[in-house]
Image 1: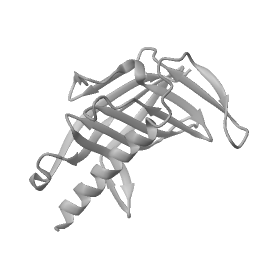
Image 2 (image 1 turned 45 degrees about the horizontal axis):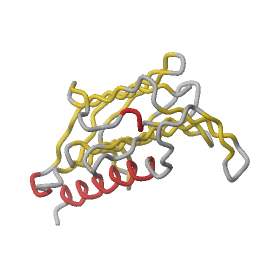
Image 3 (image 1 turned 90 degrees about the horizontal axis):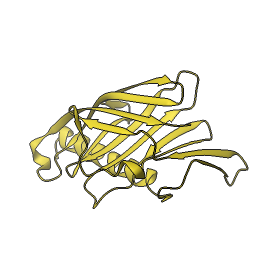
Length: 166
């Protein structure tokens, strides 16, 4: 396998894992709440709200925006959605600082796993976050492989995610 195919496969697996991990706590459309975690810290959970997810300037069709949750716990902010039929999904991990930094993004777009991540010393994609009150806007470019044709090489898509994490 060539280096690009290995990297594409790794990024695809990372994006899929990020979406699945973010979706593992199915809270449905429950209102924002605080829950206590196993280590006794309080997690702030927000769902629904005024979420927007755009890829290449278009709404990510097929993504249930009501399934998007934002969880603040353990110094991290996790934004995730339920995957709809395995076709569309979202997972973002950021630091919960005054000036947060995006650590990873995983998107499933038209069955393609796209990511922004660092692994084994190599970085893929880019992401920045801006905060306005409790609204986080994450923008950048995610890269991945065409899952229907992984031999075709890497694909890159611009994205914008706007979510309320109150």
